[in-house]
Image (cartoon, rainbow, N blue to C red; front, side, top):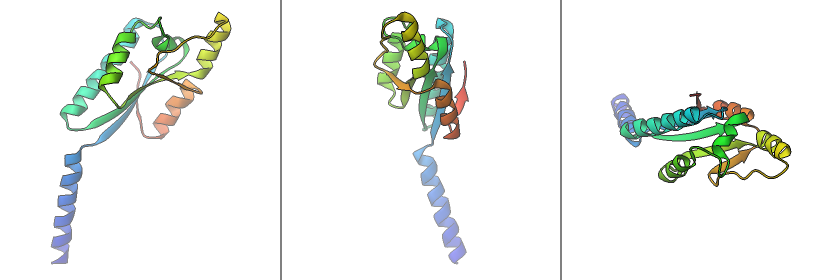
Length: 143
């Protein structure tokens, strides 16, 4: 009798857990100063957010930029600034990481500070950030 009660309790617990949905974690890699690549990355992000929402799940997405891809987050220069602003407002789980190493190199070459969009969070290293996210269970996507 205890076995049946335990089995029933486990079945009910599993049903409630499934009803709550799953949170997926995705790291998106952008290292090219190419509007097509940037738009493809944002398309991927939008599609996966929509897909998981339809499944009753949530998703946490971090777009990690470094090298030439950092231009995606440079204030006044990003060809996708409007999309980033709109998508960030609409999706609490969406963040954008900017590589501090790349930023420092760009600033040294330019001889002045390079302003980033308000949506950008500076991380010490874009490559290390991608590794850290993957070690933390994030799926990796490179458009």
